[in-house]
Length: 294
Image 1 (cartoon, rainbow, N blue to C red):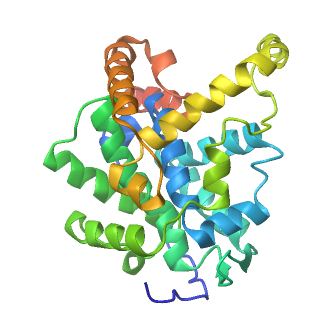
Image 2: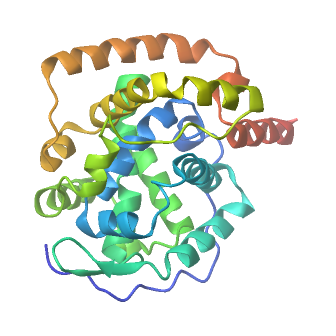
């Protein structure tokens, strides 16, 4: 792949609006199943050497994994359900990444806002949603897939990504995607850490105090099974071509286990009450949309 432009573009001047109420993302981005898919997208992002180096050198994912996860999840929810806050969140993220620069493992300089890198971080969400929904919910129809991609482009605009830096159709996306897989992705140090069941991850420090106390006491027993499950879902919910490009092992036995897991999720999640099925920002936005119709 040709060397990407190193000087980041300025964000667009006009505030773009988030994707529409009632769209594909409106239904799936706040569903608890999205929590299961996000680690696969993250792994695909940090499999790019420049992005992996930025996370390795500048992120607090090792020292504050639960706080970083909470902030990242809130950010993603704001892109879709934040209304006027969506564009503000996009500006905040660009400001946050403005000074993230360095040298990757291959000796190449990087800047977090270089369009090729910033766009890839965003682009990973579409193939992961497409693949994960087929396993955990139901496969998208062709029309839904096109709508999902159009809405994901709209989210990209919220993040300050110019249309010229992202393929504008599904047909154009797949050659771009395959080119990045073939020429850029690898098992970076951050990918290997995300999949390491022996990683010294601290006990969760979010949630009600009694839950935090229980988890802290049980964490020596729970940590390794949790990390094994996280690694299983990270690799399993990653599109197979991305899995192969990064060099991640996936066996037929693991695939059968993933299919069984998917069947349970498909049976259980749709019958959950909304307060359990949707994340807080999504619930709030859905209730506001219902009130607006009355």
